[in-house]
Length: 352
Image (cartoon, rainbow, N blue to C red; front, side):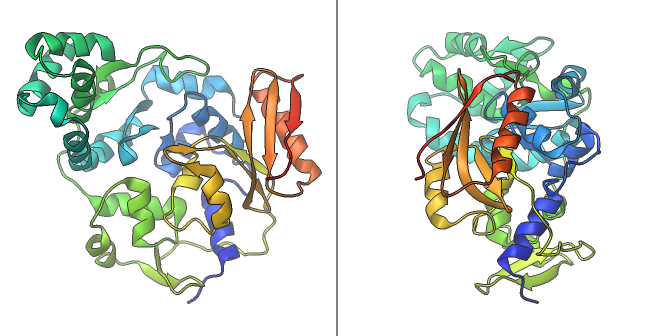
């Protein structure tokens, strides 16, 4: 069965809770999304606000303080918020990816550093307490004074499952990144059985139908083709003839379903979930939205990216790719109110 771009678009929006704001709880939504990008402190709050009815800042902050949701490096070795009971099985799946990335990034500046010894020493330093990255870095540098101290801190983060405990990750709060052993904060060990199939199932439930390259782009894992093709999944093709996979009982959305205006934050899950992003945006817009390691906040109009936006000191700035409907301004006003800038100005830049 061939799926049109609009069918893929509407199905993605439906599974991402973006066709209408959902009444599900924030923890249910985070589980639905598998993990919420947390590269920027405020982005998860804005992403959940775009998806949930009546969402408030404390809804997420309370879960971070309570430990139901944790913040740490996860998919693609980047910062995510995820339910604690998902972290314990997703994080071990990522360890090989973490190890390869750290070897590539830090091998030259950590010559002579035994990785197993570093991991064991870092664990001893962190047991029973929380340290900031600079504090842990300095302690490790006592053992390896000739190594790049900054790299030692990052290497420890790659080798150990650590989470960044509150107030890190709370709306508007920055500062030094704290390291806490994930097992101590969550109160249970990480799972030892690796199941990439489980991750593929969760991905498809939240983002499917999708191809193997899409799953790999989202997760940061490689060599998943054999895994995906060995699973009992439904197969489709898109308009370009690419094979897409989905859960056998997952429903497709009607391509004529109306899609409301949404303002999605930097690094939003939806934008980063696919290798082929034409179900969301034109290629020329992708080059403007995804620049190097940065993914800008986007405006969805009729389900597709129609511009970018940024919160500033004075209000909200909009960069349109074409004519925008009045509903964009209305949604921008609602976002400013959520951000505590109800009376701030909205600036619209010339079309690009």
